[in-house]
Image (cartoon, rainbow, N blue to C red; front, top):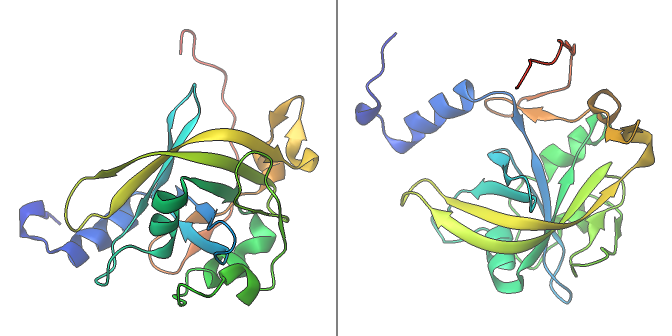
Length: 200
């Protein structure tokens, strides 16, 4: 099968992207500073873009009606938290992608507990094994249909001791979730460790 990318409309391009770039890590983002409700939403176009300072980026697609609550909150408040979900959180993570009105909180709707962050004013998910407090840096728009790539600096980490081993985060203990095409997710599965590459 050969596909000329120039012949695809946005929906067709999206279907090929989410089927090709897999599995994808998920940024489960809390945003909104009180008295705003705490917004919670998952984003699977997610990566770190700088090692030091640590900076993360994720894409928020645009709605026909304008910005999603997450993007608007971050641009207005300049702060948010990226939470990393593990296997027991799958049902809640998926449910948090449902559209709700801006004056409603997905956290409250799902009955999830939050805790105050240390540096930023946005709360973090209590049950998340990893939460990264972030300070907004910039938004990059690559196209009118491609959404906005939001970049922030990690100001603090909260890491469950249960996922640590020898001073490192142990991925097999973390058991993170990944996103596939459509409403499908994957768990860690088998891990293969190879010898380090010299000079790599």
